[in-house]
Length: 83
Image (cartoon, rainbow, N blue to C red; front, top):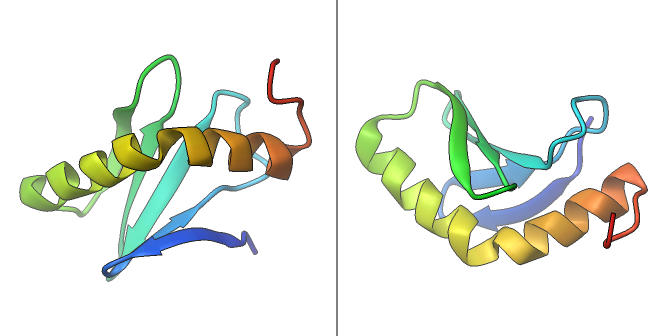
């Protein structure tokens, strides 16, 4: 089970350990899930169920917290922040 890294409104933000190396964050809410790349820029990687208006809200949250998520990702995965 992956720890929760952030919550805002009904959105839960998680990082999974056993996925690809490219930094990303998963967003889960009400049975929907989206994945956002954190590098080289914040962008939607995958969407399973979120309507467009919610994706726009989530994108803003991820953009506003991108640096925090990158640090948490590296700490969780066990990499140095400057890699």
